[in-house]
Length: 459
Image 1 (cartoon, rainbow, N blue to C red):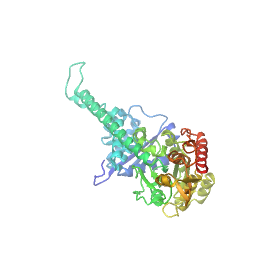
Image 2 (image 1 turned 180 degrees about the vertical axis):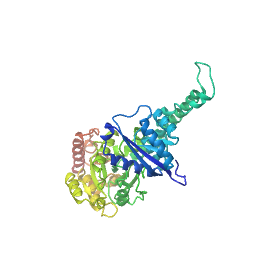
Image 3 (image 1 turned 60 degrees about the horizontal axis):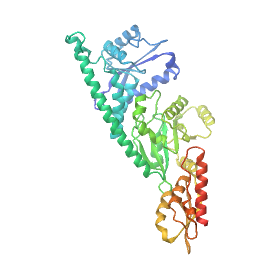
């Protein structure tokens, strides 16, 4: 199954509902999402099957009768691939494939395939390859068993198949180690990039896949991110400036979409990319309000955010595609349930209210204060413009008088670089501020920055 195949693979979709599976949503929602995943992977759906059981069959996942029915449908419809909405064990996958005589993919393999064909950047390809190899490593057993059947061996010695498995495991583990090292280096480069953006506000778009994050990104920044009506159309993180004439600048980043039962291998491999959400000052949680399961999508996104350590980042709920929701009562109920949310159709609506909401959020955390800079130290003006918004600038006899607005952290940076004004004590300009703690201590740091700057200006 590759993106270069001229004809799409003919797929049979198969869902086995167990009590645990039923708790994750309705059958129709599960089937619809599986259909979308299959289409995103380049398949054409020719048949669907559902089996409801109290527990799965330990050997073949399907009961013998259902497995025989699936085999008949494969022959009747010319099926080339069978896709499960469940995760199969290595032995189950092998036995089903042997019985049906066609390629079998479980849910995790399907998502990994979509990520593999959709990865564009070097980092994204390395992340997907790592996830794929870590998923395949325990599934090598049985792949070379035919070699043992074809040739005999001394009792107690390893057969040819076992030897081949050992070789493959060694090769895969070596490749995994190399990929992890490569991704660590890329993460270090990203950390260096973060330092150059330390004076900026960071906003990250998150949400369920195909909720319209890339459309919101394009409408807010003219980023030119590719937009497609399919799952996981965006895998690579993109960062753009929201407002170019504003200081400190606001950076907006797009991220990979989330989904129910997102394979943990992908979460682990994409952790460095997903850190853009963890490091953000604000999250825009984009929701497809026209989707009947949008409430479940919100919960899924919140679970993934918790898994990557971003559950405490402030967020604005952005309900997209309201124009596609024909049930006006449902829209009214959604507005009532999320009074602080922003409702829009990102393709056509004016985005200025959302921009204003983002700016308002950051303005609430900023401090405005006067400063006086001696003419002998005008070189520091560049730092002031870099770390703050200059609201007023006057050239007087005793120096340059400014009114600046910035975050407490950036004011602290400016204060640390400020030379001591004539007549001021050394402590006025170099008053040490407490280390940047998290949580409630942020307010104390804000007050200290403000007090130090005011003291330096009036001394």
